Image 1 (cartoon, rainbow, N blue to C red):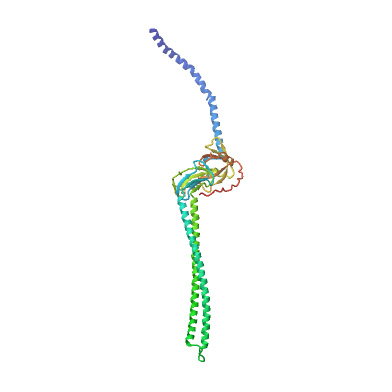
Image 2: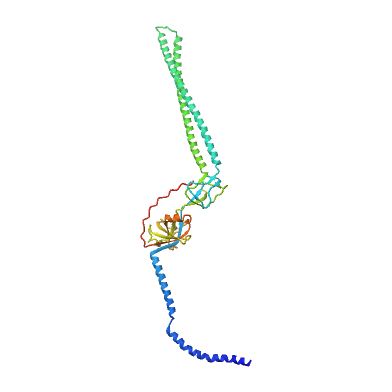
Length: 396
C-alpha cells in the first residue's frame, strides 16, 4: 500500500519536471514552422479551386454568348374535341381510352327513335301534298275543259246572233210604210231575238273568261302545293341529316383521350365526349425577349424531353408567335398604370421535330410534356421546307 502510494505520487513530479524540458524543445520547432509559410498541399488545393472557378466562369461566358436555352418549353399538338350535334341518349360507345381511331370511324351511336319519327312525319306530309297536287292537276284540266266548252258556246251564240241580226234586217225590210209583207209582231219578235242573241253572246263570253280565271286559280293552287313540297323536301333532308347525326364519327385520325361518355347518358349538342390527339406534335418554347436577337427560322435545335432522358431529339426553328404570351392571356397586364415595373416578356417559338423522330416515338411524345431546348447561335440556318396545310374532316 505504501509503495503504491509512493509510486503514484512520484509520477506527477516526473511529469512536472519533464514539462519544462518539452516546452523548451518544442519552442524551436514552432519557430521553424512559422518561418516556412503555408503548406504546399494547401497551395495546390487553392490553385485547383481557382482554376475550376475560372473554367466554370469561362464556360458560362462562352455558353451565354454562343447558346440560348430555356426550360420553359413543352410539346404541343392538335387536340380535336369530339362532340354530338344533336341531343339524344347514347346507346353504343365503340371506343376506349388511348385507342387509335381513323377519320370517319363511328365512335358512338344515339337512339334514333325521335329523328326517325320526324322523318316519317315529313314523308307522310309530302305524300299528302303530292296527292293534293294530283287533285290540283285534275282541277286545272277540268277548268280547261269548261273554258273550251264555254268557248264553243260563245261561237254558237255568235252564230245565233248573226242569224238573229239577219232575220231582224229582213223583217225590217218587209215591214215599212210602203210595204207591209209581214206583221208588226213578227218584226218585234225578230228584233227581240236579235237582242237576246247579243245578250247570250255577252254571257257566253263572261263564262269563258270565268273559266280561264278558274284555270289560272287552279294552276296557282297547284304551284303553291309544289312549293310546299319543296319546303317539305328540304325539311326531310334536314331530318335525314339529323338522323345521320345519331352516329358520332371521328373527325381526324389519332388517339382517343379524355373520354367522358357512357352508354345511357343523355348528351346535348356541343357537349364534349372525348378528344382525339394527332401524332404530328411540335415543341413550343417560350424564350425571353432578350434571347430572340440571335434566333432565325431554320436553326437546328437540341431538344431534351423529360420523359426520354437518354434520347436527344433534333428540331428546327419554324416560326415565331405574332405576340408575346402576355398578350394572349385572359387578363393581360396594363402597363399604362403609374406603378409600372419592367418585366422581361416571353415569346412562344414553334420548333418542329424530324419526321423520323415523330414516327419512332409515336405515342410517347404527347402534348403537355416538359422539354429543355438549346440553340447554337453560331450555326447557319437552313432553308425550311414549306409545309402543306393539313386537311382534316369536319366534326360530325
